[in-house]
Figure 1 (cartoon, rainbow, N blue to C red):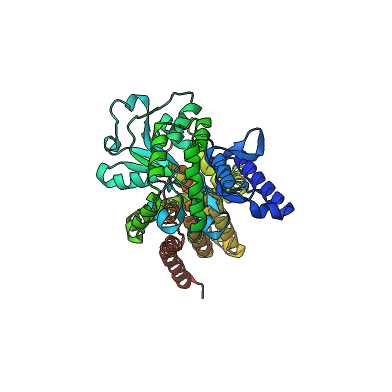
Figure 2: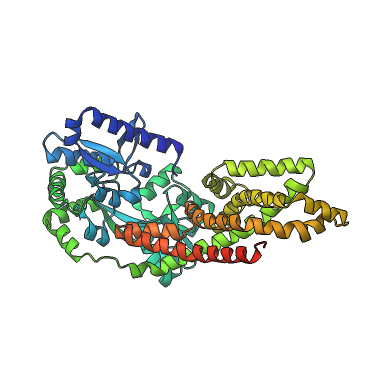
Amino acid sequence: MIGPCTLAVTGLTLCLSTSLAAQNPRRASRDLVWGGDAEGGAPFVEADPADPSKVRGFDVEGAERIARGLGSGRSARFLQVQWSNIDQSVERGDFVIGLSGVEETPARRARHAVTLPYFEFREVLAVRPEDAARIHSLADLRGRRVATLGATIAYELLSNARDSTGLLPISYDDDVHPYGDLVTGRVDAVLLDHIIAQRALRRRGGSGFVILDQPVAVGHYVGVLAHANTALRDSVDAVLREAMRDGSLEQIFRRWNVWDPTQGALFDRVLHTADGAAGAARQARTVQAVAYLPSLARAAAVTLLVSVLSLALAVFVGLALASGRLYAPAWLRILTTVYIEVIRGTPLLLQLFVIYYGLSGVVRLPAFLAAVLALGLNYAAYEAEIYRGALEAVPRIQLEAARTLGLSEMQILRLVRGPQALRYALAPMTNDFVALLKDSALVSVITVVELTKQTAIYATNVGSWVVPGALCALVYLAMSLPLSRLARRLERRWRVP
């Protein structure tokens, strides 16, 4: 999970690296600047407990070995970047090479200068001990929820298996919560790299779940450079081959307890097939946008459904809150005011985490229901203030006249105050719904794959945000513009002459 300590450490690392480079520009020009994500943790890249301003991991040591092999007195300098943005950042020139458990895919080889594979990982299933006897492959998970990280080979495997096996892929932004939710029963299995699965099992003292022996698939970690940087990529490949020959790469993996016989077999294949990477690049196929359209359509439907249900809840609760502030006894007015101020004064993201994870010890809500509740209760506070302002905007002379005629407060609200307040509230209500539609992107942090999350997965897989971003923007516009037009028509119809 992305925590304050992790963000502070990675931010401090970046600031110190930038400061040192500014103080010694000659040295900075010789540095091999490489990008990685310290949030991925050990054994890839993590903050060094002895000195949080530094990072450690086998990718860290690998970057140092590459820098030494390139000569000219180079040293490796780390730059923090979100894992899913490594491809885009390397093309922007933020750093020279990305190393952080970057997976080899045909799309990545087609769009970037990718090094030869230097580590082989296995996609393995983790299940609860009581399920280990009857679950052996993805085919045994029909109708079950299977968790993984978004924008990974594992997610691609689950998405491809959705139609054939009927399983339900659940995307996470970190590798901690999938295994936690597996133990608590929110998901039925987790599919991730064997390194990540073994690390999660060690964190839990070797209990809580079991890792199946038979891998679902095999993949490789590579370094990624800008597409135009093929000359440097070839030099890096030469360094990696030399590190495989002299045993220094094996020593790095052994220090981090990730060496196994499959790595030796990979080294043999690489050293005996020097042109294997180039051949793979020539055979790589560009992923077509049309292949992602069904997934984007499903995600758009999820976004719309979450938004509509959340708005309905927000309207209902908002009306109750506004009525409480205007008509309730003093103690209830205080309670409604406190609720409104607390909800408006705290981040929606925090509220999502509290409802989904914080309350799991009391009530284990499904992710979709938790998303609707969090968005609905959050926007109810804003809706309440809209309704209160609209109700108070009705001229007092009309209210006094209605009371003089003998109407009760409920009749005044229904016949005089309410209809006029609706006209005042319509425009801000429309704005709130459009804002809610966009804020629904936050629910991806609790495993709901909505439109923005699916777009991010798509963009990571194809290595570009241009087409995915344009498609996502068009879908959002298609959902929000008709609502805005309807609101304007109602405003014109209800406008007081």
